[in-house]
Image: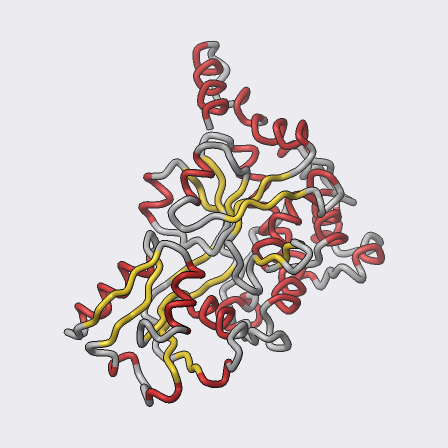
Length: 338
């Protein structure tokens, strides 16, 4: 962050505008030969390591896609697990290049923290999980409940708003780390566990007896989860934003990891532009014109990533819902590459 700000100041003093600063992060990433990605401590399906410390998940795939666009190698990523309290400071301080960690896009975060969101990888909402044996069928039955919550998250504020609005009493049991929250709920230290509904499904998949827990039907908030970068580096922001759009555009156009080489010969102008066969869409953001081809070749498209990590055929078992493409009844929508 300091380097970027200093570069901006020097550029301004020389009358160069933002040009000198724009390449700072990309240059740094190329110099060290990897992308440093801030992730969760481990939320299955989004960002979690296996027994060999190999990270995977929908949000990990975003970081891999950025690396593929730059290096033609999706493995040139290093991962920094961060708590909710640590994540924004780590990004602002330059300890990571991208934050891709189940983070809700809000106005205050977008305007007060010196960060910019690149897109929404998953449209989510906050829910509640309870033990089936407790016989709770609705969030309106939670008056007087002890609720496990992670501090430093939108979850705290959403819960407070919901219970106040509905004139319900509750006792928050607050922890600083997601793993602590989950363990406390499993140990019976609280009656309810609340967080994003996708995370509830992910955590439930790890329980010894997942069928003993239910996620209540109410969704009490909007939680657009997406990656973010530091403000002040337009080029790096564009790389992050258009990586997100390329994942969606590929799915819209039917370009997959399996057929991307065949699609290089497509007559469809939109596919030609996406894959760098036609036009100059990589050069303006400091990449080669086949940057999106590299992403699809190494990572696949958005739908492939979704299905691989959190879709109906995984243990997490999430339907596309709002995260379906706009053409399939959802709200995921890529801006055109043209």
